Length: 212
Image (cartoon, rainbow, N blue to C red):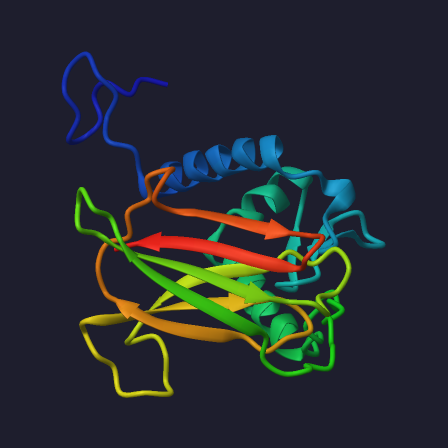
């Protein structure tokens, strides 16, 4: 067939394709795409009926061959019905309970009161820094327990009105209550000879020296 002399065509080239030919070409491209991505053996909506033609159980459409069905699966109607079916199944699916988190055993112990303590104030003769030596007595400390300490800003605690010029030094060890000391809110000198701690397991005494 000669395509060169069709109305609207240029010499040496094919004439503009008709809408029917464009539809055929589009369906062929969709069929080729579907062949690469769809396995008909696993398609739940693909069915061959008793007269030898093929049906789409989702869209209730008839197709003369597998290629026609494959092209249909790439069309707007089939894709829209797939989206509609997925939304319906999601709405009908009951909500699953949230997975239970692993339970963590919380250590509980009876507190026996506050520990004894002693605070010694000194000043470094060379720098004039204030040195505070804290001695906390934990005679009934639980076996294997090592006392801990940490600094807390005045704005973190909720017991007293916050004062910008002070901070707190906390001490804790089971089964004693946590105690705190108010100290100047200055940068702590972390030099090895200025800031140190020691836990004496024999006498059950905890020492911490702080220079501010």
